[in-house]
Length: 524
Image (spheres, rainbow, N blue to C red):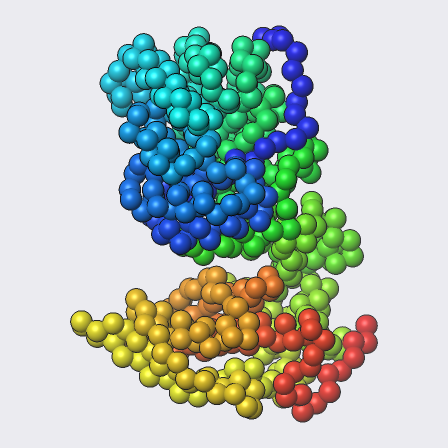
């Protein structure tokens, strides 16, 4: 297996397929406006290539690709096409100058999906590439299911692509069945047989998409197909943010990505696709830079590198200390300080003890819980809210679109009334609240959860929310009651108010109404 000499690349091109393969995530469907917004975000992020879509699948898809191609972005724009003339004609109509053409090459796909011979597949491939080239389109050719294709036939398919003018070949691990060792060996072999540049396109069915992509690049491929948040068919594609940070930080491979925009771009895509991120998602997950354990928080607060492999600011995120039963004094003190408290040593110990008691009951400790505990134990007056809800009316029923009208007061001055519709009463009222508060700060609901506290039709339920503002501040809050709508309202309002307090302190301001008692200085 000692093929001709190769050199691992020092720089990798990022081919983003969020708008094509990412949109193939089950349940995701983007409008043309959504796609344009994401394309602009990807361009700001610095991706080399944006795969805008698959224009033959629908008129909406065709329109979106055409619009994106006319934006004049810095990123190169491409679109997907089978090697069929009708597909390629859509690329021509969209004025695409760089086409991503594909046909399956594995015997499994040829026999059961396409129902054609190897020879027919090669004929179609050659004809498609030649047709695209005749119309001035540069071609990247993908052999779908390449990693399960018989080796000699795969090489033949790629050689034919090179012979008829393709500028680049792509090696898809279509169902994620390769391993880093096997994938690297395949890329090294192809490098010894093919002269044009090689891309890799890996899926995450076994959780190896990023590892395989890195292995492929280290074996000589100079472009990786990736998606924001790892979106894609089934288990998804290689995650852009994970691939980029691992390539740059662990392998010293350069790329054009502005990493400080990763967190922001991730949230934009999550919002528009309506696919929430798992909290422990690497790089951009809510807990990626979150710490609860007392041992960890103590280390991080003294020297972040003890438990953080990279600075959160590097990807546009921020460190988050979470109170809970594993928390220690240093972590709780740090979180209280971020909320504006400086308690005495005895008061701090009592808060820590209460936090552990709540955790032992299997409950999360929210920011609003911590605020309440600190005020109760220190004897501080309850803080006035930035926003107060002064009136609320909800209309819902059969053949009636749920509608909520709310009146919010800001501080002691401004008062605003607005109404919104939603898929249900909770959705309608939370949308109405956000319509008002967004004028002061963009706060997005990231997590909403209901837990029954007691049984029966008159059961009391606890609503827990997590909200995030446009600065990356994440705040949590909860409220309980027999009325789920009102519990949701109070939890959301509490979360927004905690966020506003944090923003105010970041700006060097004080609370709108000062507490009746001065906060004690820390004595230990």
